[in-house]
Length: 242
Image (tube, rainbow, N blue to C red; front, side, top):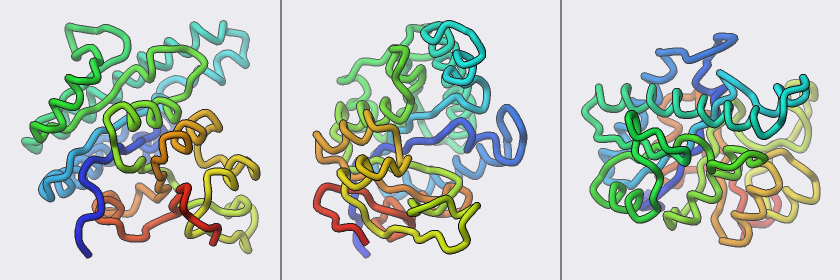
């Protein structure tokens, strides 16, 4: 199969970096992700990554416990920078040039996000990792992924999760749950299928950016997804539900 995508955005949850640990970052998982990314870069594909922070701090959970929501979200954004720097270090160890761009200025450790600069890094063959979310409270890193994908003209958002696609019910609780091959944005929104939050889905819909949901824990899946192989569920405007 020929290459389907030239510039892609990969959304990694903080929980994905946690592996089987209850908290923090599993170095083994980060190394495996770096190895997959190396294969993607070897194909000449431009790759940007948005990373979450839920393995370190969840703003929504903290605000539910009484913390001011905006403050909690800012702390969560700073947690994503820790993940971004960890991932950068793993990639640089494999001699993959990487830049971390943050939406909150931290010039001692990362570049401040500027759209043109991000695109220039991609054109020069560098992996770009976006940290600190969108820089705004009340927005998830899923929404940031959709936003950054639109800004850098990415052709697709890859949503790497712990399941192999989108199901009509929770496969952990329902052994007969059915996995969708393809979905429309409208079906995801109408059925509240939890692919990404509704703001992220609406952004992708408005900008006609497909979303591929796949299982990160299978080695090589990132490369398969980038090649356009059917490794999960594809959400897109022209897709029928199947």
